[in-house]
Length: 126
Image (cartoon, rainbow, N blue to C red):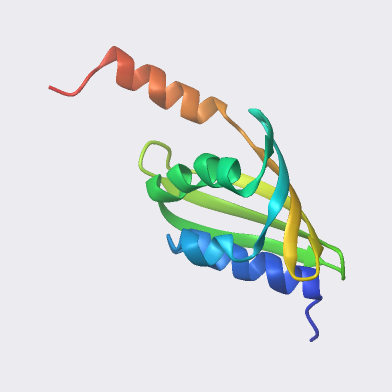
C-alpha cells in the first residue's frame, strides 16, 4: 500500500503533537500556516502553536479513526481523551506543499469543553 505524500506529512504531524512533542510537530508546519478553527482564523506558526499546544497538553490519549489523502491534501479523523472531556472527536483537513502543512481546517465540537468549563466554575476546587 502506498501512502500519499500529503498523508505521510499529516500523519507525522499528528503523531508528533499527540505524543506531546510540539517541537517536532512544528517542523511539519509552514511559517505562514493558515488555520480555520471553530474559534476563527489563525494565521502564522506562532499563533497556531499558541492555539494548539495547550490542547496537546490536556490531551491524555488519541485514537486515529480514519486517514485519507492524495499528493496535496489529507484528512484525519480522530478521538482524543482530555483532562476535562473524555471524548473529543475532531477532523482535520490539511493542505500540504513541499512537505509542509500550509493550511489546516479543524472541526470539533466545542460544547463539551464549554460544559466542562461551566461545571468547573460552578464547583471550584477547594
